[in-house]
Amino acid sequence: MSESSGSTGRLYGVGLGPGDPNLMTLRAVQAIGEADVVAYHSARHGRSIARSIAAAHLRPDHIEEALVYPVTTETTDHPGGYRGALEEFYEKAAARLAAHLDAGRTVAVLAEGDPMFYGSYMHMHKRLADRYTTEVIPGVTSVSAAAARLGTPLVEGEEILTILPGTLPEEELTARLAATDTAVVMKLGRTFPAVRGAFEASGRLAEARYVERATMAGERTGELADIEPESVPYFSVAVLPSRVDAPRPSGKAAGEVVVVGTGPAGPLWLTPETRGALAAADDVVGYTTYLDRVPVRPGQARHGSDNKVESERAEFALDLARRGHRVAVVSGGDPGVFAMATAVLEVASQDDYADIPVRVLPGVTAANAAAARAGAPLGHDYATISLSDRLKPWEVIAERLRAAASADLVLALYNPGSKSRTWQVGKARDLLLEHRSPDTPVVLARDVGGPTESVRTVRLADLDPAEVDMRTLLIVGSSQTRWVQRGEDGGRGIVWTPRRYPEA
Image 1 (spheres, one colour):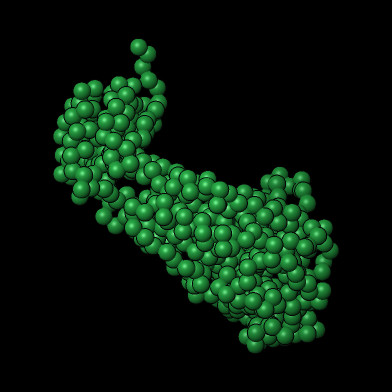
Image 2 (cartoon, helix red, strand yellow):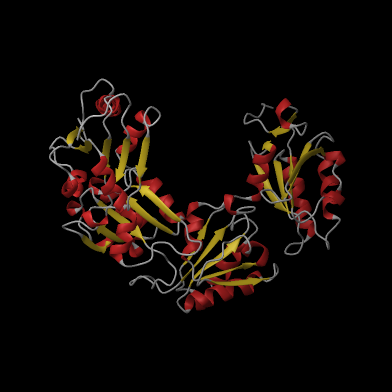
């Protein structure tokens, strides 16, 4: 093909698909046909998978540019280390391609899969696309190829797909796998033992599938748990398919109850572990207000009830588990703080439920959420007390308030008031004023994380019971708690308690 003159050439980033040449797009074949120069990456052995996929479309008059990595996974004596060696290689490779483009030649850079999806082409694109006319031609990814070869839906409806590199630390992989609905982990090879460990630690190993060299010669699929680590090449992926209508993995325990904390409000407060437990459940049980915070999933049964039937709710969940169901009992905040964990464990301690597995997963507490919004009022020792006298007499509450106040502890006061309980806040304020200065800061945190969130600070002497309801949490400072006005807080001020307590 003759060289152009008087103008620069055109750059193509050509996606070749997962390996089978028949899965190349018509545009990919067309772009290779238009090119004067065909470039492709390879390791030092010189063999290029990208070139082998496109081989049938290469012509004798094509100028071939083999971009050979100086290192892949081995160590290097480059002064900039591994990253420095690669950066230098990318700069030199881009300069080689730029010389062709400046000479008016059209350059097609071949890329397995999709050029912008974990591909080597993107390093050329970032260095050249702002200087030359460029077209990126998408390709079928290995993710799509793996799902097709498994013959099972990858993601359906409102499920969330997470794509992860196997090079992440095992703990990070574990958290991500626990939190998502479906996933694909790429770049296996020597990372496989850690990847498998992450699947096991997240409780997802029984669901996981394995695909090696999808659509290529030597393709292999199977259960991830059955794969020998030493047999795994780099071009393989681990897949968590869609859970919608999926059969329960064989060998899984018959049923269990997991008590989960949803945090004070909304999905932002869920932990990865909690997300995973909610996604895996056959049934979700809880107080209707908290149940509404949990995403609706196809095939999952939801059982809402009133806030004052904790024991009945716990017994219902355990009965479902005894029939083989995986049950998530949802609780606001942390399930172990004035919440459902105690109710479930109390019923589970009965002989009838002795064989039902029960797990408790922590959540962000209302006290911690409120404290974070206000600053750091819980920075030193503090006590958590519920002002509700529904399950304990007021005399006990008053005695504990006096004891905590006498000890100069910061107080996080739960359940301060409701429509049927309007006097406790005033009583608590008057009692605390016997031990605390009238200027003691009190944080009123209402609906933290919710749409009507309100966080403000008042003096203890100015605490008005009429401004407190069941959705409010109070944090009462100690003698050391500070309330400071800063320019950036809009006049609300920040509240913090020093970590150092003065000597007597």
